[in-house]
Length: 244
Image (cartoon, rainbow, N blue to C red; front, side):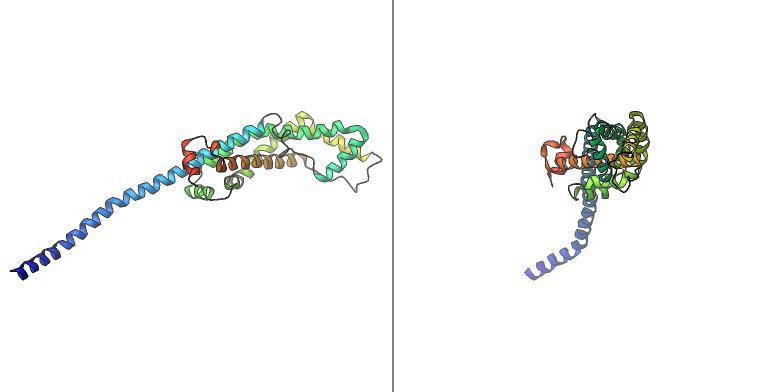
């Protein structure tokens, strides 16, 4: 009797095994969309968190450089005359024209401060167009990965937008005139010993330095968000950057 019972049990198990396999397959299919949904949610959180971080960082950086003395009062990004031109400026200053030299430096920085707000729209576009891969690269990159992303995506556009504003404000504040007067005074001075005054496209020079300063300030804001929990002002920022 017992051998017959054992054979019966084995037969039943063999008959049920395909059904059992089918059940597991169906269960697996049900779980797969849930797993994909979880992955998608994680990616969405990462992108959302980074977009918040970038929006916060860019806003702070633009605000910092756009205010009066945003460039001029910040030794990290203050726009100075090129080294060779500073040699000329030193000569002019020694001749009693230091005020004119100072005026050139001040007006260069004022022009940069006036142009800086134009960055907001281009940074905003770059944030909106950010892909999941961009976000992952920024999250797992170095301390300035986001700043480097903006530099790649927006610098040429920013230059085109900044330069006309810089030129207008350089003319309005008299920077170009003051610079030419400074060079003219040097050329007729008895101390004009340099081989020649280097040619300088002042508008291009100021525009490039304005952009360099803006990206330096953006890098500073990015480092704060990555390293300082107090700079993570939203739940999403805390979740994304707190997990690193």
